[in-house]
Length: 523
Image (cartoon, rainbow, N blue to C red; front, side):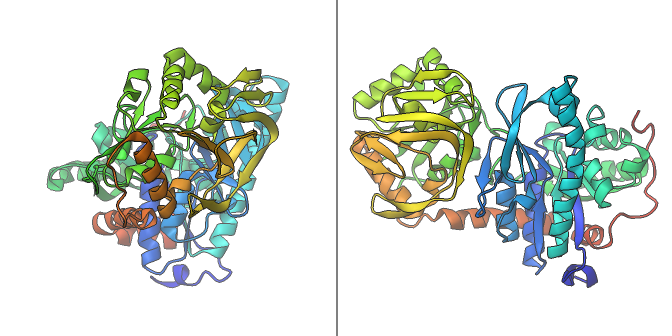
């Protein structure tokens, strides 16, 4: 490393934007991989995403809500996540509206038309405010660059979404404002990667194209020499080199941003179930409720040898499950109606009556209660819950954002809370992480509690006993160590398969001069 990356003390550090030809092209994992590669070289690096749309979020130590992907990237960079790393978070509440979280705090609910340029007076006024957000996000980026040697920024969707370019603050709008180079990631597993690279570049304005410095191929399978002639032709057509061909990697298990990577009836994260430590496996069924949030809660279960985790949406799929999980959701009342419409509510009630384990987390916990009073999220008023826990929930206008620490089942536990619902626990057989247990039904507002190894093992032992399974948790599974190993694998992908010299040059020296224009450009 030379000069700039090694001398951040007060100087502005280097920056790079990781854009993508599409959503889910691999921007999040490439950003994390670059962060892990850099920090292993002794570089003080931070991740950044100006605007994120995701139902998977995390609470920082200062009580700010950010995208969980940015928390994962911060772990890759070995730094504490902060609100600076994700100043704008959009949490969908329907197909047409989202909660807007600014610098870690919710500031209102807005339609997509209103956020991206609405017609009503209120929405148009907010659209004007949205344009001012560019100043907020560039200030956050500037602060991170002041305190770090390098900042790796993740884009959103595609930079060639020409209908949204006027108000863009996360792709080329950010790159232009901060004068940082961009690399474009393409998922070759989808096909058409050369057309995607060329088309993405050719749809950008001359000014935006001047910042696109190269490409990264993601998820390649096979002999890379067969790809090389196409890469040379792409360079001839665009004047830009490909800075790496990253191979397809199974089972990375890294936190997703926008949705499930596998079908609802598939195994979690392409995970390979290790043989059980005891005589039996333990089967976990996660109800794939609408607007499901923080489904990463079950990753720690999937990491346990002998635990099989599936996402399900039919009552018959609960029949062989040893544990049913009701996960978090951005639409508790809507998810509750969905459970009833599909017959899942009755199936869960039969399980509880038979002493078979059920776990509700956050919105799932609220659904298990007796009553929900909601004038905030759904504005449905008073709605009957499933009645399986002695809990009454009232939705408050102010969101609870916390990082609780406690003890349960004789083991230390850490977690985080993100919810509008305030739970009043009126009974139960025992307290459970600020929630309660009644019979074999457990409920808590705490996300992330299952990542605490001792507690997870104690909980699984209770579940196995209630389910009548000869399942024994492995004594040496450490989720934090597994996550670190996965982040190191991402760093290895960059170090072994990317042009690290070229990437470092972009981060240190900024935008290359003389990048050619590819017609026709943006209309």
